[in-house]
Image 1 (cartoon, rainbow, N blue to C red):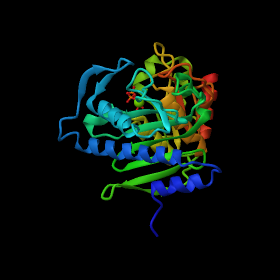
Image 2 (tube, rainbow, N blue to C red; image 1 turned 180 degrees about the vertical axis):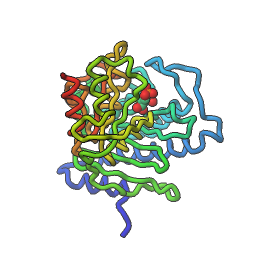
Image 3 (cartoon, rainbow, N blue to C red; image 1 turned 90 degrees about the vertical axis):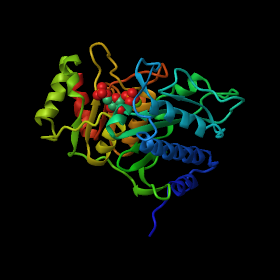
Image 4 (cartoon, rainbow, N blue to C red; image 1 turned 45 degrees about the vertical axis):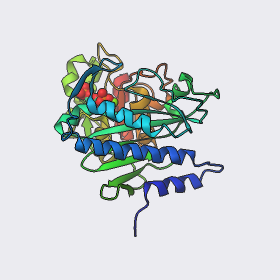
Length: 328
Ligand code: AHM
Ligand code: MG
């Protein structure tokens, strides 16, 4: 029997929501288009001279790669004609991006167009992460307030993983479903229905080279995972350095991914709105959990677009244990 396509799944999900207009399905299917376009660009990057840095820095003073810019442009273009998205925001743009004219659509979209892009030159995995909120204001166009909603208010969230296979993984508040791209025909098919994060297995993932920057509690907590002194016992370490790839492995095999706060960067490196919150929604809907070391990520009230957050995400028991150890 042939599997569901991604678009069939959207229609199926939508049929369960009374009064649904199909706008969310359209938005999600446009995201899958952006994903297919970016996957193609990544495959071709080495041939067409798109590896490496542009020489510019983004709003967060990070070096920008050619593929970061291209991926961001793809997202902008793909939503140009999708009025249901009132406006968009992204890791690569300092402020909310407004399309010309009035856009009263009911959704706002925030994304990291190419996460883990430092892997590009090494032909490593990367991803795009997205989060969709229903607007909480009703003016002629969205405002910053529409973006600064807690993760618990997300309507849908997910990611596209550009690995050996391209995958689209999302939830719209129900199960987490994973789709794999059949490159020959450009279609995503449901390969991972109802994903659940396993408990009691898997690896721990953290950049241990940052140990000197952590406080004593963080150091002691990570050491317990390293030495197999947590409830789950001996673990292996894994770290791709691309959040989507590290998270996807954690979703499939269990365990925990961590990016702690540091002495000079107390909220760590990752961003709340387009990295932490969307993945936290996926984790929750798959039975897992995510915290910032104190609070559930989904409960954090954002104060700014590019707010950073420490992140502990994965199997519920592991995340709860790490959070307990951090609290002391
Ligand atoms: P980016 O959004 O600029 O690509 O940065 C985020 C990435 C994550 O994908 C990854 O988990 C993390 O940065 C790796 O950081 P580090 O190299 O400090 O371990
Ligand atoms: Mg990122």
